[in-house]
Length: 301
Image (cartoon, rainbow, N blue to C red; front, side):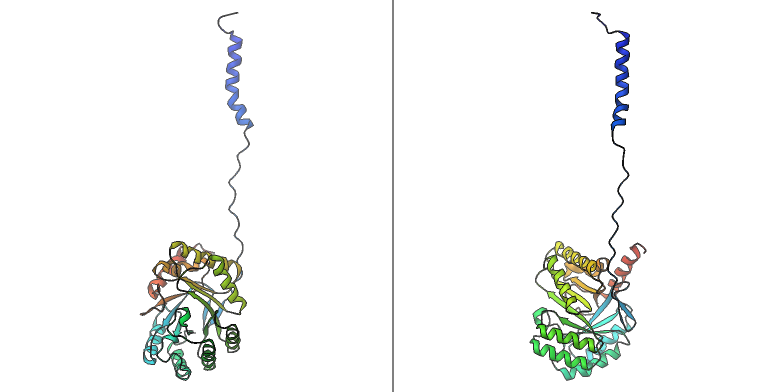
């Protein structure tokens, strides 16, 4: 046997070494192009509410500024300030904060004066019961009777109805408001915690089933994850419905939900001129700046 391999053997081995990478490349599957991002599912068409020239449900979230006065004189001053502010789109009159919160005759007399002082800006009428974080306790029958009397005064454009009042009272108020051409903001408030996402969505869906025109929920976050739950629920509901949404996480931790909620489907948000009506409300001018900045950064459609 020869000590060294023949020239033929060396040439064959070299050919195999050179051919192996080419063969491996030929055997490898062809590269595929990156997958295209999935197409977004179309959202339900928005149900836009046209109120005194204001389109709720179209464009930027509209800013609600509360009237938090205790007497008629202060209320009128606040209404005039809201009317003069370019950052306030509509006013909420928190009648539970008034000294005569359950005096239907006095409130019915003041309501038209406030509407006039707002110079055409819409007015949301709200009695926030103590059971849901308000200033005054009232039973369901009195709640329904007070609202019925104020609806007959014909000064409100929207009416806040708490969804967990007596079902018969809720149904009657929704029907009465709609007969008067008043839109219903149906609301739920949790000042102690943030319900699970599924529960938030279920409440909003229940409000819609009850005939609400605007679906509202306010929750108290314990950590940033709770704020994300509120925004997640808002987006899930927007994917199911075109009804205007008014959702928020309260307190300082939840302030971001008031600023960025439009990205997730909010149609309305609360700002303030002076005194806040709930924890975490932001000055209306700063809120407007933030909404405008987010709108400017959003991709054009």
